[in-house]
Image (cartoon, rainbow, N blue to C red; front, top):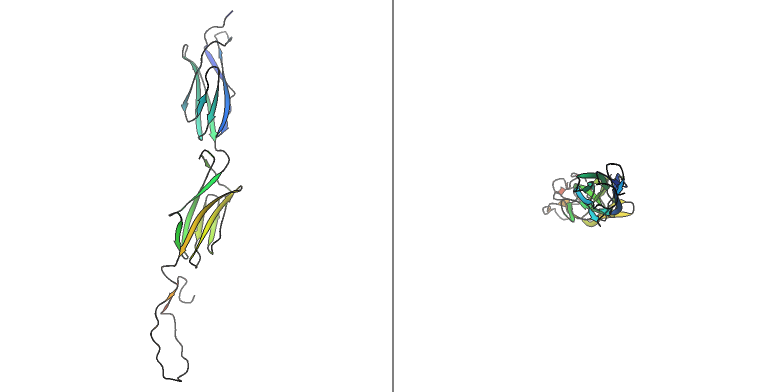
Length: 219
């Protein structure tokens, strides 16, 4: 007794999610109209949505998903039109790299100025990984305020070169920072020559018209 043509197909196993870079062996079971299993048919495996690789042929193939997103793996019997599909959500893998985005790389900023920095995490296949809980720090005299994927860096009042770091789970992203003199000081405008008679003693001179600073003349 031989089984009849395959009129229904069932793909197994049926995971809802798969980590990027992982693989899974998929098997197709074909049944005839009386639910008998047919072992002699040749399935057609395809990916009709999303991205991934199908390795092998026949009743079992290996699926590898490297890119995050929804993948639709389909198995069909062209002879009868029977078909089954499997939806798998590919999720990011382990965080391996963090990159910091700024208006320039390295970040060139003037004293006391601020800039919003954005960090993006990636797995080994360059899928974006969330950075919730990431912490920020700097070895400059400036400050970094914020956590997670974004923070605000405010330069100090000293021209210097340093870095801003963002850290999560042992992975560190680093941005070089170059702090330049402020356009608005501090500096002293040339003071005119002070001419007094010999032995006339000391005198007061207000610097309010000469001293320039972002914090005001009283700094």
